[in-house]
Amino acid sequence: VKKDEAEGLVKYLGFTRDMKSVYKRKGIVVILPSYCEGMNRALMEACASGKPIITTDVPGCREAVEESVNGYIVPARDSKALADAMQRYLELSDDCKKQFSDNSRKRAVNKFDIKSVLAVYDNIVKSCTESCQ
Image 1 (cartoon, rainbow, N blue to C red):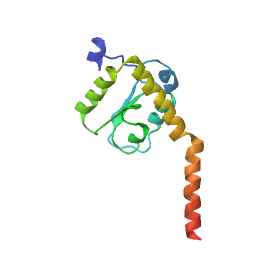
Image 2: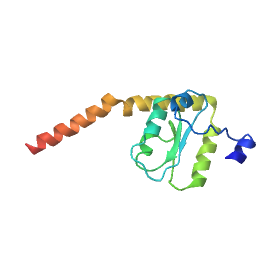
Image 3: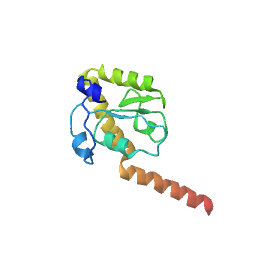
Image 4: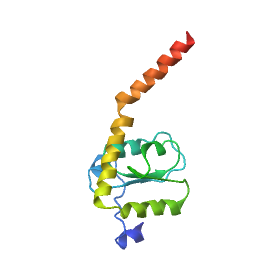
């Protein structure tokens, strides 16, 4: 990373506890090459902040991305596929990148809004309760 940063290929932001300030920046794409997750809060926050996502095809990550709509999903442990997805994103037009961002925000509203999540849980509890009676 230090070498790539010195060559001007990436800008390493370092560690922060203030992700809100990071997500406010323009041009941010969230990349999470995970091997195993539960539902990933960082990816939900990235969607809510309207950030495109590149992540791996594992439960908890794949749910945050609709392929080629708000980001890319790559096989876990496949660094070449990850690099290819990053390259594809970089080659998108500014309009396409903006569309990815807008689609991430829409995905957050439609899939991760707490009211929607609670409604799903409520339906599950009701169906379980009804089937047990």
